[in-house]
Length: 367
Image 1 (cartoon, rainbow, N blue to C red):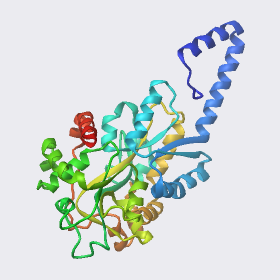
Image 2 (cartoon, rainbow, N blue to C red; image 1 turned 90 degrees about the vertical axis):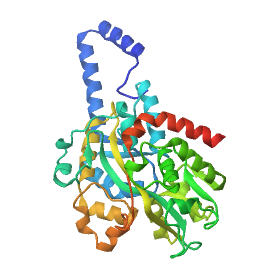
Image 3 (cartoon, one colour; image 1 turned 135 degrees about the vertical axis):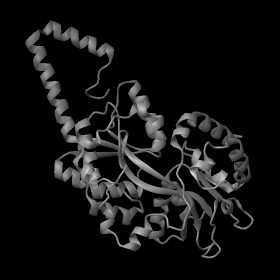
Image 4 (spheres, one colour; image 1 turned 30 degrees about the vertical axis):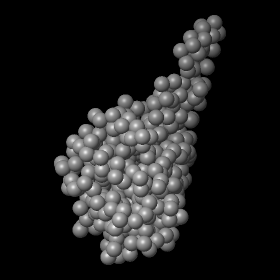
């Protein structure tokens, strides 16, 4: 069991011991325990994210300098997805054994798992107040980065002028033959939105929501036989594109950005992309709350580091001044072109319907 947490039975036994040992001994024991907890709080913070090139960039550009400046070590734990991480956090919370301080989260997760997330006081973080982009700090999280969920396609098979430009093209296996791929990480609402766009619904939140779920699944029935891989992590997405196991995939833009830098023949189609954001959220009851707040404030500053982060990952972060350190060409590489029609999702509706969507999607996959 985690240091700093005790079971009901353990607490009762401890009280009995202290009563027998006497008041002086009790005071010494409690003071020693408090000192050890304070030392732990000042020496480490535990962060959970999805690993890969983005995690590597955070480690080098932010976590290592933070440790050098403060002496607080940053321990990184990798999980395949935000839903998986929060499922583990809930299980740990139920037995009072929370080992994590900060988790990578999303707008949907912050709404559906609100009871597991500590409340941020954005005005108490001076770096955010001085340099944070508008809306980058809310009471449930600090912006980690903004990205697109879009179409990745093999640029050898579909060169310029013959590339897919819409989700209808993604569904068109006669004009664009070859296996497809979608994610399977417990967030089916994005895929259902793609299905509706493929069926002619405009790429606008007000047109897509509330989702016509029956219509979306009818459209998913058409593409299902052509889905070669349901990937469960960003690393797997990258591997199937490198190996040309699929010719098109639903993608997270930063994962494809890094493949392009590697020289893999793949491109991103930004038209009809869903623009999304990842956040850093506090784990309620985490073991190192003071160190966690120090790290979060640190992560709101440092524009030069975020400019480099954008160059490496293709993602834009929370610092409003980072753009000053990027050329016009570099800025274009980490965001959708002005000509692309993009949209956001309705996360309030998703939060209310999440469980039903996940259950139906899982059943559909197995059918």
